[in-house]
Structure formats: structure tokens, C-alpha cells
Image 1 (cartoon, one colour):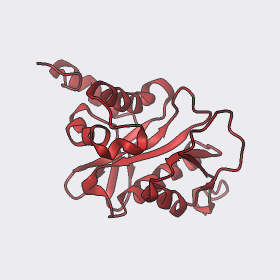
Image 2 (image 1 turned 135 degrees about the horizontal axis):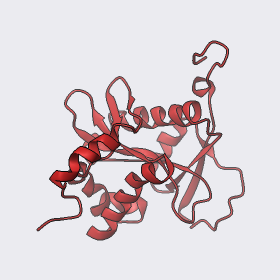
Image 3 (image 1 turned 90 degrees about the vertical axis):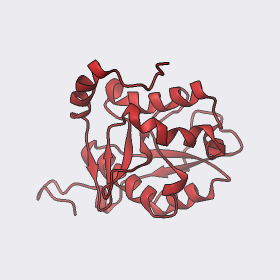
Image 4 (image 1 turned 120 degrees about the vertical axis):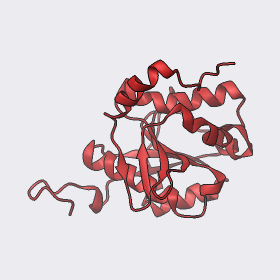
Length: 200
């Protein structure tokens, strides 16, 4: 039976041409590239298992796929979205990280979701820092927020390591008691030196 994430052979060439225009971010250990349907086999447990409890899950199969498709679809609709995080050494899929905005979100959010196997190795920090540099330096954004469940201690620690602080602005939404909001602002290393064309 064909599933929604099954590649259409006749469409792969077009998909790959489209993906070729999306930005690719590289770090010492990682490459952040456009999502592919083939990534789903590795990424699905993020939504479908207890790992999804901090993002509103675990999800059923349909809602999990729709959430992933929404994260990927932002590139076509708004020119921003989520990247698949891959390891340079072997191409292994580690998770997704990027920018998105759900219907009731007042601002763009920086989000990250990694597989269980990818935890504890600094990959999330490395990938999220690369996205922040792209957002502030290349896109010229002034701020991003991250919604984090109050019991998600790993993500809270990561937000703080990235330089984010608890949000002090009043947001035009009613937050659930378990939601914390962290605000990311440009740091020195994210600003372009317009005179020299280099990062300071």
C-alpha cells in the first residue's frame, strides 16, 4: 500500500531540484538540509512514542505525519522552515531543527527535535546555533522565541546555552501552565559587519 511518505519515482527529480534551492547549513559535524520523505522512517518515533510528550504527543500516525509535513512545507509557503539534521560522517538522520509558526503562535519559533540516539552529544546545540546565525545574519530577523514544556529540562538547558532568556514581553496568547517561553536575541557572533563583510 502506498503511504503519504512514499516517494513517487516520477516526482523525485523535481523534488530534488526544488530542495536544491533551499539553504544548506553546515557545521563541523552536521549538515542541515531540506527534509525528504525518506527521513520519516527515522524521525517518526519523535512524534509517535513517549518522546513526543513535550510537544503535545504521543501523536497518532496521521497527526504525526501532518506535523512533520507542516514543518517541511514552510519552505514553499514562506521561505523558512525546518531542516533535517544529518551527521557528516555517515549521513545519518538525527532530527529536525528550524523555524516555524503554528496558527496561534504570535511569532516565529525556533524549534528542535532529535532522535533518542542523537541526544547527549551536543548535536542539538550545534544545529540550533547554526539556525540562529542564519536567522539573524542572513534573514535579518530581530528575534525568535521557543516554547518549551516546563518539564523538558534538556530543552530548557539548551535554550539557556544558546543565550535565550525567559521572555519578558506580553504575548497576545493564553499560555498553558506547562508552557515556558524563551526569547532569542542576536548576539555579537550573529551580526554582520557591513563595513568589512565579515562576522565580528
